[in-house]
Image (cartoon, rainbow, N blue to C red; front, side):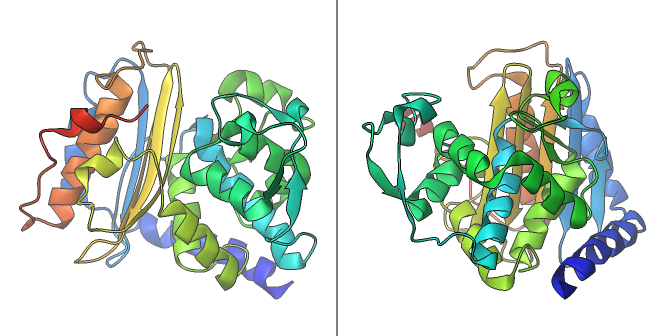
Length: 303
């Protein structure tokens, strides 16, 4: 009980302290990057060593798309931490659960058995929609939202398949968040403050093995550990990343909405903003780095 009383206070103190430390130089660079975008963008960046932040529409509400799988994961780990479920549980898959046959879990044969740990891993690492919706069904969208609320997140919520959230679902889809709140959630996980230290460690490990590494992560050397999650629907692209950089960790979240460019090619305006922002941040925080992405990345394009 004590853990849950302290967590919201920690979040409030973090947000209040950060508000007093703005990196104006970096903030100016971020504002410049967003100029001319045909839609709405929000960015939150925090240097975890200095506590300084740079923001642009960081407290506006945006669609999460698949980033909602991070709060879903936290909701599951609360149940695991309480002993309501075990990470080694065997679950039986049924065809009625399939959201997309292209998913790893969605392609399982009816009545196939799979470890809960693998379902959770796939939900994050490959962004498996069937796995994520299965977990949400077991945990309950309302329980995930209760965890978010008691931990100080006022805008981040699961909307779809959750009682009382229909109006929000029409506006934002599966989930909603702000760049500040999503980045803060990942920071909490990194700091061992989400659910419990052991739960946070497992969640952080899962988030550091991301399959979809062709956007923000493409601008960070592969030798540097990152924890991340992407999200994408037609008019919104997003990504949250915590970088364990050589000279100090930093976290950032970029979200767009109402994009005129709804294409699914690498040149999509929202994805390009994510790539350019990640490149800017890497060189801003690691100015002596000489690493550059390979010019042959197209050979190994993700599908």
